[in-house]
Length: 607
Image (cartoon, rainbow, N blue to C red; front, side, top):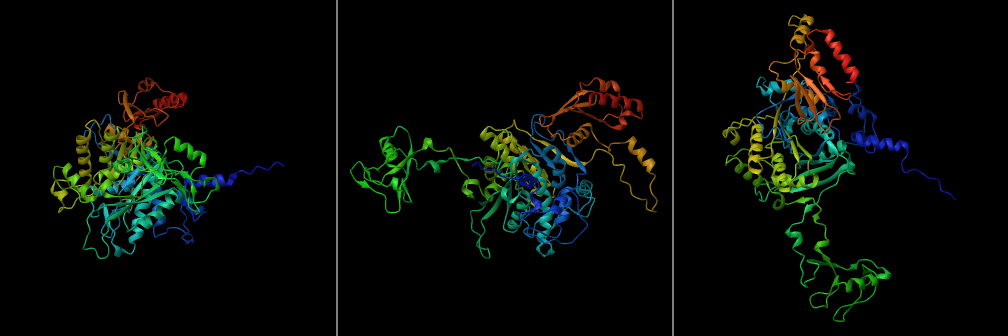
């Protein structure tokens, strides 16, 4: 009788699984929460009624989601001339507030980053977190950077605050939410953390990335010395959480076999197949067809004990013995064992969850190497070892991949990428983001001339390039206000009267760009708005008109910041119907006929 075919998944289940991949946060203890989904797409309810459900909740969670959903308000300014090999590199360092920078990068780099590593504040009670309370992030950020505010870029989060964990979670949530968007489908994120927040961080990552995409919790032995002044235990480890964007798409790379793994392979009988080791031929279960006697070269018979059996049937075993794949020891009288040849073993080792300092370095090594790179200057007390990050790079990325660190610190990740490229003849690229956090006037860094952490980062990258490979490079950018004048944002005068909006609009029309904006500043902002990466190819094809292309984007972009524009300039461009053209309205200088002509031409080409 014919059996009715039942599909593995129903239509409903397929759609729910698709939603789960896109919005794992909306799944709470296996139940889909529509209200959470609405918040994730920017629709926030005014109903503050608490709905009980399983999951990580804290005061301020809805605000954290709201912050993640807000669009960026600024752009990135290229620091031309400050980098190394700027015309050929795809390595990028950005000085800025990482939440805003992630939003600025989101359109251009969504789904393009293979690996993220971050070393955020651990929330020890003495740490500072980034100040996310401002409404207009870039303008307020620049005000703080310019030292025109009594507030700092960072705020303290003492354990006595009453919202100690909540503040840290609200700080981390929007950054991790944006980080997930940037990852490729087969991408992964590593996060360093200690005991203070590891449990909460894991619950939050389960929500953001999906519990099913958790890969492992690595234990790193960060120190080799015992602290006898510890109250209870001397802590010598930290954790590294590892999550995939989609675990079914992620493929892990194995580590190279070292002398330790190969040391047990010998060749005492000069077997022409090379080095070998031996493995047990017994199975710890009874199988009737695999219980028989094996006779050694000396005539001794070996029979499996009760409840066990050989791993192979007798015919297979006899064939293996004839092929010299079974050893009976040096005297030919020992228990038979299977010969395993090194040439047949996988030339890689599956990573383990405990990373010893002898294998990946410790904090003292990291500090010493950094000081050595700076000619003996002491700059930073808690950098991460290059070898530690190189192991992450090895197992989670491949040639040409992009690797991101938005808590760059002293740019250990950038250094590790540069070093790894040389060792493996690869061309991985880094994107690093660091806040221009002030160094303490009592610190070694300040005394060495570094007023900001970001200054250490940039200098280290340059020194690493000079040390590792002078053919590699880096481009520097800074977070900045939009190049375009925001004429919409007006407030009442002191006497309460509304400003003369018409005069303000006229002023904005006459000066549509902020003071001091360069052509490259404007082009960079247009590039980011259009979804092109910061390293897109640029070519000036006509006076003041730039052609921008990149393999990620399926169209060519033409952009100009000219204040005066001629129709003949436009007609000389080799436009096709998929192209985009961007210019200022000011460029027509009130010539509606010219604007209409250009509009008609664009429609003709479907531009």
